[in-house]
Image 1 (cartoon, rainbow over the protein chains, first blue to last red):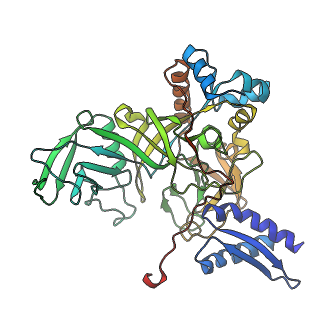
Image 2: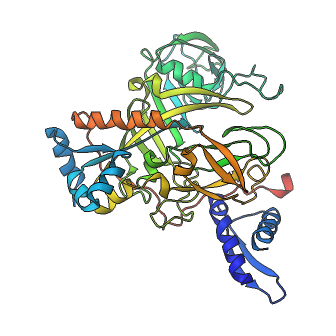
Image 3: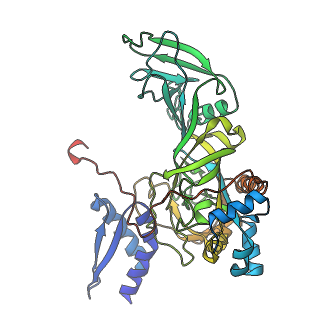
Length: 61
Length: 401
C-alpha cells in the first residue's frame, strides 16, 4: 500500500523531473517506511533530494 | 499509404485536400481515421507566441573604406548585436536590450524596446540606425561607422531561431504571497491566475508527437514567409513521459528554424515587452503535416482534451529547479477559462495566441491549395523518443561557485 503510494507520487513528479533531464528509480520501501530512491541525471543531488523528500512525503501521506 | 511525392503531384494539379489541425479533429470524429487518411492529403498546424531563442543575422555590405565589425562593438537602434564574425556579418538576438535600459533596477522593469522590436522594424521595412566602433587593420582601416540600414539594401537578412515551437509547455502559477513577473507573464499571488503558452491542438509538434513527418529540411510557414526546419531546437528533450496518444506530458521537442527575412511579414514577427522580465519576439510558424497513412492522421487529430501538461509553481519550484507538479490539466480545461488547483478555482490565460495560430493554419492551407507551396521530404529525422537524446542541467564547477 505504502509502496503503491510512493510509486504514484513518483509518477506525478516524473514529467517535470525528466523535463529538466533528471529521473528517479524506486529502490526500496523498507518495512519501517524508509523510501530509498536512485536519482539520475543531475549533478546536484542535495537540492533534488530536498524536493523529492518534500514531494514524496506530501503525496504519499 | 501515400508519399510526399504523390501529395505534391496533387498540390501541383490543384486538387490536394488540405485541412487545418483544428478541422481534422471533427473530420476524423465524423468519418473515421481510415477514410480520412485516404481523403485528406495535408494537415496544417500552427502556433504564434513568444519565442525567446529567436534572432536574425545580417550581412550589411562593405563600407568605403572597409570596416571590420568582428572584434568591435555594434548596435542597431541602440540594441547590441553580436559582431564576432567576419567583417560585416552581425547577429541580433530577440532578447537583447540597449545598454541604457534600466532593466529591473526600478522593479518591475518595463523593457520597452529590444531585439524583438528591432527585428519587427527591420521586417516592416523601417530604417534602423547602426553604430559600430572597432579597431583598424591594414585591410580594414575604418574604426567608426554610423549609418542607417534598410532590409531592401543589405545583402542577407536571415531569421535563424535556435529554439522555437516547444512541444507542450508548463502552466505557470504563483504559490507565494507576492506578485511575480516571469517569462510566462505576471503571476498574481496565492494562485491568483494560471498562464499557459501553447496552441494546444493546433501546435505543430503536438500533432506529430513522434516527429514522423517533421524533420530537418521540412518546409514551413515562418514569420509570414517560407522557412525551413534547420535542426532540432536547443533543449530538445523527446524522452519525457507521454500519454497513450503519444503526446508528451511536459515540455519536450523543439525546432530550430531558418528563413529569408526579406520575404517575411511584420504581422508575424512582433516584438514583445514582458513586464519585469525582458524583451522577446512573437513568432508565427505553420507546419504542413503530410497525411502518409492512417497513423499520421490519427496523430494530427489529437484534440485539446487529450493534451495534458503540468502546473508548475514559478515563485519557488521553477527558479530553484525543484521537480514538482501541482497537478496535470488538459488544454480543454485550460481553454475553459478556469482550472482547479489545490482545491481553488483559478482563472487561466494563454500567452500564445490561438486565433493567430488559426489564421496561420488557414493561410498555409490556402498556399497549398493554390499550388504555391509544395512539401519537402525531411533530409534527416529529429531525435525521437527512443533516441535517448535528452536535456542536461549545467555542470557547474564547484571550485568556482
